[in-house]
Length: 211
Image: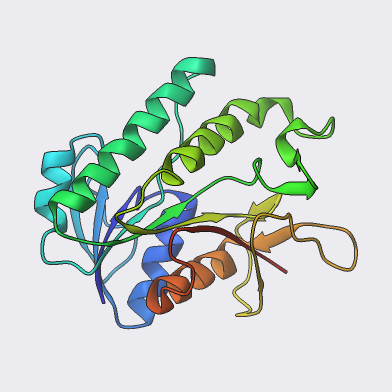
C-alpha cells in the first residue's frame, strides 16, 4: 500500500511508519519538521491543518493515517483539535481517497454501560484536556458517512516497549487483561494499526487494541 502518515514523528506515528516499512508499504511521512522518523520513508514538511497542501501530498495514495495529537489548553484545545480533524477529512476527500485511519484516545472507552473512562475518579487530571479533545474528534468522525474511517483508541496504558505481535481487538469497551490492567506497547499498537489499515476490517467504527 501507499499511504500518507500525518504526525509521523511522534511516539505512535514513528512506530506506525517503522511497522509499515517493515511490511513493504510505501509511506509519505508528514510533520511540521519534515524529519524522516525511520529509514525508507519519504518525508516532507507540512501543516496538517492546511487541507489543500495535504490533499496534494495524499493524491495517488491508498489511504491517509492520522497520528495527530491535541495541543493547547481547555476548550481551545478541543475546538482546535476538532478543526484539525475536519481539515484531515477535507484533505482525504479532496485527494479522492476513501480510507482514513485515525489514532484516537482512551478516555471515551466505556468501563461500564454508559460510563466513560474519562469521567472516572482515577483518570489523570493532566490528561483530561487531551482525552476530551479526542472524544470530541470521535464524535465528529461518527458524523462522517462518505469515508471509510476507523478511529483506533489505545488502552489506558501505552508506552514504548516490545513488539510481540499479540493483541486483542475490541470496540467501545475498555479492554483489560487478567491482572485488570488495560495496556499495550506502542510497538504492538502500531502493528495492530497497520494490520487494520491492510484489512479495512472495521470501516466507520471506533475500535481498540490491548493485551
